[in-house]
Length: 219
Image (tube, rainbow, N blue to C red):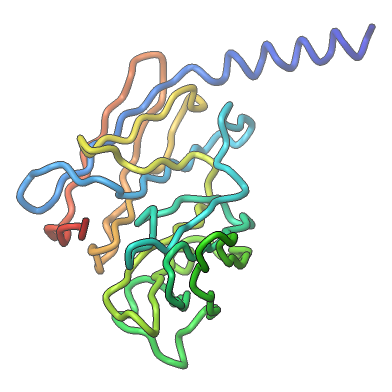
């Protein structure tokens, strides 16, 4: 009974500590909304965790000569499964995003997946991502098909979201108090300066503008 009361008291304290919402708008150099930018919020109050944490497993499919999704967001330590749904072979090669090109000195991991045979399951391989921050933004490519590009971001904070088609990242139930807001976008080579935010009862909004116009996604 005492344990139940203690748990209830702790839950009430946590509920009181998570009352703030934040909306982050990411714009390109021309003021247009940017989709699939990664917004990371780092609250100074570390006592509370998100109700819906980032998934510890994700799947990236190679299909029609593309990585799908183009940008994958996971926490550090997550397992990512690569699946080849094309009938021809693909590589998955990685290096820290922003290196500009792949070569033997900056490769993070490399694997090869056989093409999918008709009527048989697709080939796959798993990789665990154990680095965050700059090294957590990983550029994916294929040795066989040089036009293929994808990205994985391993977030150091459990509070991380990709922007939607309107360029917005919505956070709910953030811990009250000061927080740092960071943005990563694949074509933004120069790091965007972090912003400060104050989370409270009134919904806050931050606007972050990139210094580039992202390349149009191949469909």
